Structure formats: structure tokens, C-alpha cells
Length: 256
Image (tube, rainbow, N blue to C red; front, side):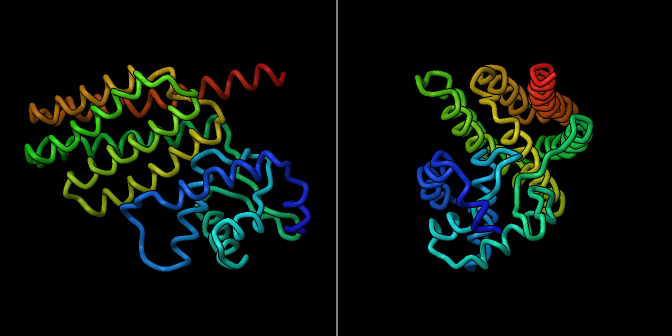
């Protein structure tokens, strides 16, 4: 049945995978562990976080295994792991597809995620060195330059996601709290998942606002103002939830 579901996929999905798999596989993954299983898991997860699959669309095991040059088993193992983490749903004898969440579940998640990132921000204001803050400023500057690009909104949104992910990863490292950073990093993956499954270029039209918020957060770091850093970070994360909720509500109106 897995093969039958893959065969029913249109050429569009196959082409998206072909166009994106090499780029995804070549990315530097700060948390990547060695080994084939981890490589396949991270690459399949990145394909989901890049929005290559719609929630109702079957995930083609054979296509993924062919593109990665591995057997079906590592891909299946990766999907089982992603199922346990809440990214996909596996239906025995039927197939696998991206998991769908309700608007309330998404809102609840971002309330939790905002608190975690806010705590990270307060720790950075207290602990970061000037050189570490300078690194954050460099990444933020790259995000700011995305506003000048004349590219497809989806391309700009993807570039923003990668830079934004790098910025927040560096922030978590600077917090000097490994257990907290690991937990919030996992939540960051789920945040990217909700953004991807909205299937809209959510950030192409709010780059200026997002960049401004990043700059305000970094300014609070430089001022050693933990309270301000925490407050602005929390607002920054909740703005993402507002954007996703707006897309969710708009889709409900259209379907109704």
C-alpha cells in the first residue's frame, strides 16, 4: 500500500522532492549526530519543515529512499520517529501523511514556546559576552537584507526560516543552559512545522516587522536588560502564532 500511495502522487510532489532534496541534505545541522539513521531522519524532517508535503498528502517512501540513496527501511524508521514526535501520522496498511492540528492546539503550543524563548532571552541578557552578541547582530543583519530581494515570496520565506533558525539556535547556545536550550530547540522544530503546514509564505510580507523585533531583542541584550529581552521575545513568538491563526481562520472561511 505504501507503494500504491506513492504511485498516486502527482508529478508536482516528485519534482519538489527532486528540486529540494540535495539542498536540504547539504545544510549544516548544528545538532546532527553521526550515522545513516540520523542523517535520513534529519533530511526527511527538513523536507517536512520546508513544507514539501500538504497535510492530506501521502509521504512517498520510495521517492525519498531513491533521492537519499538508501533502502526503504531507514526512511520508514525516520517516519516512525517523526510520528512519535507529532509531525506525521502513520496508518497501518494505508500510508503516512503530515499530522494536522486544531487552531486551539496551535495556540496552546505557541503560548508554551513563547515562555521558553523568553526565558532564553533573559539568560542571554545576563550571560552573553559582547562577542557573542556581535554574532547575533551579524545574523540579524543578514535577515534584514532579505527585504531587498526580488524573489518569489516562498523563496524569501524559506531563506528567512533558515536564517531565523540559525539566529535562535545561536541564542540558545549563548544562554549557557544546555538542558533548557535542548528543550526549546525541540519546540523550535514544532514551530517551524506549524509554519510549514500553513502552506503560505508567512514571512515574506512581515520581514520588516520580524527584523525590527530581532533588533529590539538584541538591543536589550546589549543593554543587559533581562526583563525587556524576555518581554520582546515573548511578543515576537506570539506574533508568529497570530499570523498562523489568521491563515487558519481565513482557510476556514473559504472552506465554509
